[in-house]
Amino acid sequence: MKKTYIFLLLIILVISCQKETLKLTTSIPGKYKLAFISKNKGTQDIYLAELNGRLTNLTSDYAKETSFDFSPDGKFLVYSANKSGALNEDLYLISMSSLTKLSRRLTKYSGVDKEPSFAIRSPLIIFISTLFCDFGEAIFIIKPNGTNLTKITGIDTWATSFSPPWRKEEGEPSLYVSEPIIYYNRPSWHPVEDWITFSCYGGVENSWQIYFLDLNQIINHQLISNITLEQCSEDGKNLLGQKWSTFPDENSWILVVENGSGKILEIGKKEEDSTIQGETLLNLYASNTGSFVTGNYFKITIRFKDNTKISGLLCIGKTLPPPYFTHLTSLWLGMDKDITSPSSPTRDGYLDGHIQIKITLGPIRFWGSQLGASNMEPAFSPDGSKLLFVSNRAGSQDIYLANLKTREIEQITSDTSDKFNPAWCPDGNKIAFSSKEKDLFNSDIYILDLTNRSLLKLTENEGEDFWPIWYPVAEK
Image 1 (tube, one colour):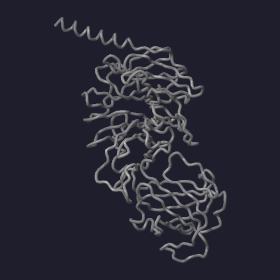
Image 2: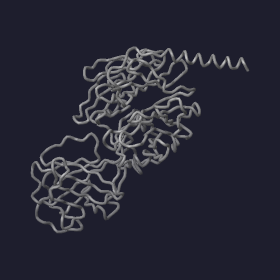
Image 3: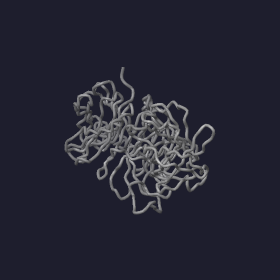
Image 4: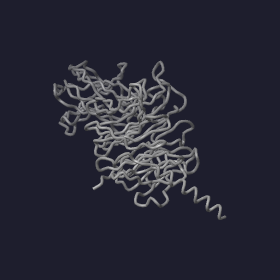
């Protein structure tokens, strides 16, 4: 028994010595600490780099931590680890004020639960899981107490009878029999809107592509109940009286809807006319009231049977800057034919205003996600106006910065080493990332200042340092 105790003591001492070999090359500039995962001499734990250059071990056990995130207030740490088996990863939650206590196990499913991310404005965690998936993965949401598990991607996200957008075949629609095998990467939240971004891999394209998904409109098929057109202010918030509707009354004019084949649709009356899937083009014809003059703004609203709705802005004679994600875009085509509808067959003798709209349901591909290249690991900036992502479009795997308002894309790293895991500092002026400079089994953490483009190498340890995440609360 005495020999056993001595042997265990030696193991503990060896592990302690291994962890002491970790070090930072310098202190972190600014007011925010930075955490990361280090795989070093048999251990794989989460460490927090303090501003004074000291490292704090946030996890210390036999398991391998593979990903993590902090709650927005910095009080909790959620992470994925294989504590219940080498091929089984679960999510765990621990208080930052009591790291010595046992963590709470949030998921207890056979398979892999990974890459958790806290919502900014609500008590929710998004993550990737193989749960309920015969093959591939799906994105789920769960509360920090382990309740209200919700699957938000699946066969209805991409389609019911249509294939995902990258699996196009000849003819329309493109049908498939079973749910496509899709793998996901790095889901994260928009700081202001109820949108998430993620990258996924699937179908015949064989590359990672970035998508946005509105959590209020996650499915790829809908039944329209009504479409309205209303004159409004430039920002769309104030309505100015003139209104058109597919169900006109004493307060609105008639709005006629045509599909791409020229068939007049009885929206809200016939199910086959009201059903849309994926990307749909429709033509709207609005009775001429004298309002369709250059500079006037209009709001288009589509209401669905499930009580959700989407909307978009139109300006006569002016091309509005395209939103970085929207379900509805429109194009003014001028005063066109005098059209009638089955409910109002009498022509008034005046040309109608013609507007073409494009409706996109389900995931919306990021406009900067270049086909033929891998585009992955998207991350919204703290104010939601920019997007970091990783792409190999120029050869090596580098980090790119997209301005979501101007649609400008800038390559911000450019050398032969592969970069991954980009993460925004809460101040919006710095990012951290991992880079493999020496070989596939060695990576280090870097900090890039976006204001002056100075680059700081934070770690230089044996093994792999990866998955940097900034601690959200600034030091005083």
